[in-house]
Length: 360
Image (cartoon, rainbow, N blue to C red; front, side, top):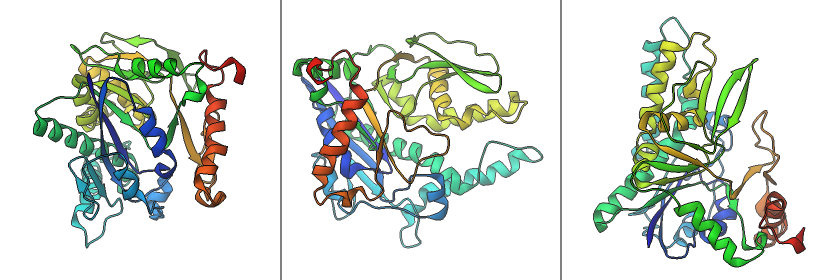
């Protein structure tokens, strides 16, 4: 039986919509699945929200988390598998200062590094938006390590799970057994003797004629020497890691970021294409620095975006656009889900080979 940890992190965008899909996705035959959460209780959708401190909250967040069968003291926002922290710090809650102190310290150091040249480090508030998710992931990973030590065991697989996605349902499969088979392959087929991970959109990116051109890869196995303007990349919203690779992805992201930052200062002469500014690139660098085998795989999820909070130059193709007042769109939120989300899933995966022919 595989032991699988699902690491849920960051701002819990749309968790009031997606929690049922997350729980269903990780019902895996012959697997022992445990959830771990580090979440902010403040939700922003854009960097501008962090700067303006205009946040959204999910009133029933604690009740939703309890449905995942985790150890959680709802009164104090903590448990062996859960922490909820304030994203925006307050003087009455010193612990809420941890992220902002990290960003302020880094911005201060950067003032001395840059001296008479630009560096790819924005002000501390924008750094909160960038560093926040990785701070949260590392915190959550520390709870997994504590759990392993307490229970004298080790997880075989650790899955990075976002709250702003929904997953394939049984409805998009011809047969139910194909649904479970697909999930098992997706989440458990990794070697255990070397660091390895399954990722999305694995590729080599090359900067040609002032734009990035990607070359898809099925896998990455050996260290490669990248030429200037060339990057190993994979998307950052999805990761299935074996236990060996998890130490690097969830425990040492900041190490990879700082190494990349230093390399960019030494090698980057154009001052406008910094590797460490792209999280997709930092993901690839983690694999290169630590000899991690990567296997590309198809997505099982659909991303949700709010209609009034879409980043500039971001396509909504293949995504589900959520009304800004989605909770009030119908008197019954479940009815809203059935209308908007189910149709979005069917549309996203209707071209898959396993999609029921009768539903095309």
